[in-house]
Length: 292
Image (cartoon, rainbow, N blue to C red; front, side):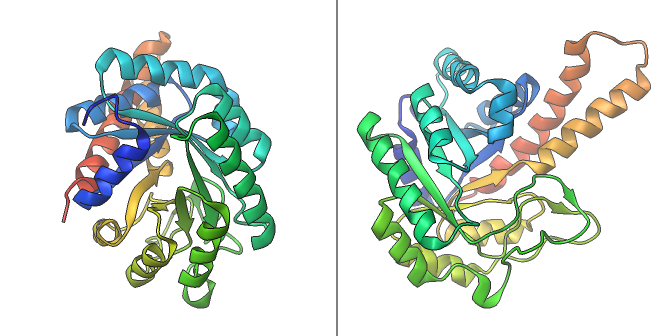
């Protein structure tokens, strides 16, 4: 794919091929390089995501400058997303900084308020640059990318609690949003002592048809490979992974420090984190790009 292709074009191509673009979060330069090296090795486009907390740590504008410089240097389709923004102000901040996409996460709000703020985000993005992608969420699936002892309290993982095709259709029609993230059995984070819940593939298919826009799967860490593949073939265009690369990074750095207690150069310690992140991301990108 041409590195000058917009994210909108990249998503369209992914849907046509029945593959998904991998979205991976970063908190530091090690994570960024691990993802970039993996994407270049696999030959796949990739989205770098930063939550509000991650943006506060890395720097909103600094993240944009880093991704832009890498994209230009390597001529690789790498995009930047303001992940899980909980106010119009934080979405606007990312748009003004030059992000390719932003998510307004109003999943815990009443649907009317969620739609009102989402529409405000869409209208602002259009006024700045029509190519900027705005995503919205409907259906609470938890908020933390970490190892969990139990399901997130209040998470909607089955039956009537899942996002309905009717609600999805209304939400997209009234907001004009570009991407839609439903609750289809996914959760944020990974359960420590049991597999994550299974995805409702039929619900994914129904929601995609009703919504009329590509779907995004949040909480990808811990999901069965078969569910990923089936979900992608039925309407998932972007998959978010965060927890499992955090775990890989932590474990690699911890093990290196344990076995090299006299090493004090941060870049030498950090390289083990880069390698660990790259390994996880590469395997996920291969899976997401299998095609139909």
